[in-house]
Length: 97
Image (cartoon, rainbow, N blue to C red; front, side, top):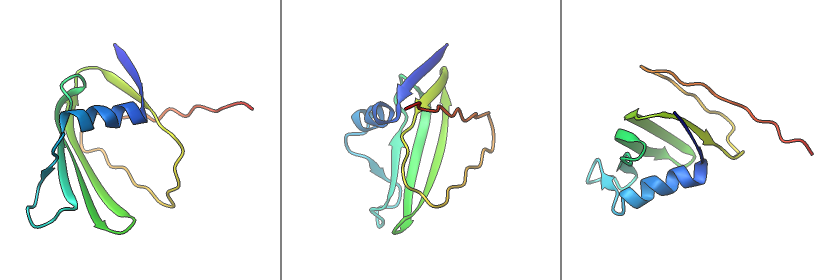
């Protein structure tokens, strides 16, 4: 089964599960780990703000179902993705005016 969810609702699920996000490094308030919502899978998501406008995100979780996250366009001059295991596919939807 495939679940389709808007990006904002996806992030909201993480925020609801993680009312108080865990700091991976107690001395670094910009290194935060979030538990994956049980509705989506098992594991965690870690966000480390290395400096202004440079963020490292590490996702380590197993999803129960296929998931399509409907993203929104956002300004980012450069973005890299690496998959160490599993599979990922980007779907692009065009909006006709």
